[in-house]
Each structure stands twice: as structure tokens, then as C-alpha cells.
Image 1 (tube, rainbow, N blue to C red):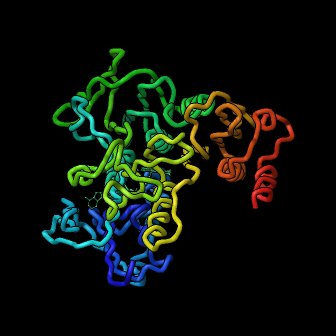
Image 2: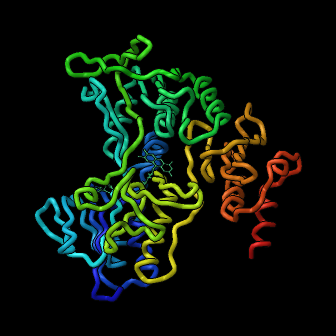
Image 3: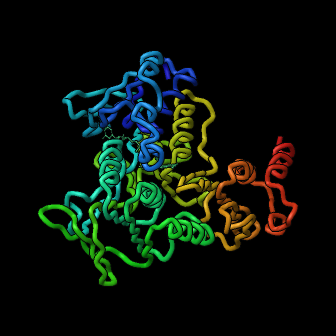
Length: 416
Ligand SMILES: Cc1cc2nc3c(=O)[nH]c(=O)nc-3n(C[C@H](O)[C@H](O)[C@H](O)COP(=O)(O)OP(=O)(O)OC[C@H]3O[C@@H](n4cnc5c(N)ncnc54)[C@H](O)[C@@H]3O)c2cc1C
């Protein structure tokens, strides 16, 4: 694209900010306009349920880039202004402030938002979600007041909050519809380990039950009712029931959407002048068996931001990264490389009882996913093994002398 051209990015989370930074790094010399619906300078979300929740970080520690970065790189940052509509024929976006911005290429990096629910009582004061910094500030104030905290959903975010809340001395009850925690994303041995770890710390965990309604008193939550008939006292209820793509803008503009905005491997939507990246994008990659997939992770947002920038400066660009995630719960760091979809064999290395182990998941003879608990070195090696598509056999991993770092090094040398 020439210096005359304008790229507009909607959403200044990990994906949007990375796209703008990579555009400059890749030599794009035209105008870049980054629009954020939030008033705060662009910030990282993962610490909100971790160190920020524990008050080990303040708002300025969360910033993705300092304020000067945007001026130095000539990125025009517009905060606190929402994009209301895309006029594809005229290649303009309409902002809530009344302004209209013209684009040559538009990047949608609108992220995801907490899943909406029609649960009766979800509107009572004291019922909270965790998505943006203000939610985290409100929630940590509520946790500081103590009392009974009920967390609906035993996913990453729900369990991270549970670990913090119990450390802060509150009574914590986690309610989960599935029969094991984090069932959507982790293998059974990892679920069992974390269930046990949280229970040992004092968290009450009710699995295989759902919340039927939230009961209030004078407009505030007081109890929740479960599908098995129990009622739990609740001063604070945290809804950690997952997220959905923010794709309303794209749908209204007629872009193809499924579970998120559909893109090809170069992040292009059904309109060649519009790309979508990060949590809002539904993409294909070889790790998802070719099926469309939407990931909610920093890795995905950052890598897709880089790919779209390379595409726009006409360099080779194709998204096919190994997905990886992490979650910090109490003293345990869970890291996941790859996806455990359709896996049929698992090999456990290390000791589950001491919280120092790894689970290797295979689909047939192919290594698909490695989950590690408190083994960061092994996680890094696993990412290299999975991305190189190396043939690592279940028998090899099960052997006592299997050394993941050495194997990853060997594979890398062979591939270079
Ligand atoms: C509490 C919490 C903990 C997490 N922990 C982890 C973790 O440990 N590891 C991990 O990998 N991931 C984690 N995630 C997920 C990770 O933060 C997301 O995957 C990542 O932020 C996605 O980046 P994104 O840029 O696609 O979207 P977002 O970060 O959601 O940013 C999208 C931005 O677009 C803005 N926007 C949307 N619509 C409009 C509009 N119409 N006009 C203007 N602006 C708009 C939104 O306001 C938002 O600021 C966590 C998320 C949360 C909420």
C-alpha cells in the first residue's frame, strides 16, 4: 500500500495494537487510525483475573504500549469512540461521535465479550462479569469486602478468580454444568488435578449442576438456586460462562460470519478490503483439522496482527501458528501448546500429586497437544515439537529417558 493510503483498525486490544505496530515495523508509511471504544489507553486483559485482581499490578502496569509510542509511530489513536457502522460501498466507518473515517483497508479487531445470558436475576447488583479493567476494579473491591462468592463456570477465568478470592479469605463456591472443570479446553488428568487443588485450598466445587436462578433482596443478589434444588448464599456472583465474538458490526455490514467473522488464512473477510483478527475472527488452520475455529488467546491475537500487517505490505503472509494458552491458578502455572481436539491417547509424565507434570495428547500417532503444570521449559519445547510437525511417538514420550528439550532441539536441527 502506498503512503497515500489509510488503514483503519477498529479495536485496540492485543490484536489491533499488534497490527498497527507490525504495520510500522514492516514499513507501512501511510496513515494508521486506531479506534477504541474504551477510554483507557490500550491495555492487556490477562492480568485482570490474575496479578491485577490480587492488587499486585496497577492500571499503568497493564499498558500494551506507553502513550508516546503512538505519537512516535504516527499512529492516530482515537479513544472512547465506538464504531457504529461500516459503509462498505463508500469505504467509510461511522463513529458514535458523529465523525466518519474513510479507509482503504479496514481491520476489525473487535474482540469478544462475555456470553449473554437470560438467567433470571442476572441483573441484580452484585452479579458481575470480568471483561474490562473497570469490571476487575469493581470485582476486587467486592472481594475485599468478603462474604460468600459464587462463581458460575469453572473455566480459566472462573478458576483464576476462585484462587484469588480464597487467598483473600472469602468463602468461594464454583458451580459448573460440565462434570469436570475446564472441560472444553483441557484433558481429563489436568481437570482432575485442578479440581483437587482448588478443593484442597478450600474452594467448594459443584460439578454437573447448573444455576436455575439468582435470587435477590432489595435489588441485590442474596442467593443462587441450583438445578439440584440447593440454594447457596451469595454476596457476589461472578458469571464466568464464556465469551462470544463481537461481530455485530461485521454482520450488519453483510460480512460472512459463523462463530465470529469468517476469514481466510490471510485474515481477509468476505470483503477483500476488510480483514478481521483476534478473538472476533473465525479462521482455519492445520491445528484445527481444517475446520473453522475461533480462539480467545493473546497468542492468536498477536500472531494474526502480524499476519495482517505483512499481507498489507504485500509480503508473504499466512496464519498457521501453533495455538498456545496459559492460566495461573494459585501456585500452579498451566500452559497448553496445541489443541486436544479429537485426541485418543494421553501419556502423563511427571507427578500429578506434586503439581509438576505434563500431559501429551495424541491423535493416532500424531502429537497434538501438550499441557504442562509448572513446567515452563517443557512447554516451550512442546511448542517447537508441535509446530515442526515432528513425528514423536507415544512410546517415545512414555519412555523414562524422554527429554523434550533435547528432542525439540534435534528436530529443529533436522528441519533447518
Ligand atoms: C479476565 C481475562 C483473562 C484472560 N486471560 C488470558 C490468559 O491468561 N491467556 C490468554 O492467552 N488469553 C487470556 N484472555 C483472553 C485474551 O485477553 C484475549 O484473547 C485477547 O485480549 C484478545 O485480543 P483482541 O484484540 O482480539 O480483543 P480484545 O482484547 O477484546 O480487544 C477488543 C477491543 O475492541 C473494542 N471494540 C469492540 N467493538 C468496538 C467498536 N464497535 N468500536 C470501537 N471499539 C470496539 C473493545 O472495546 C476492546 O477494547 C483473558 C481475557 C480476559 C477477559
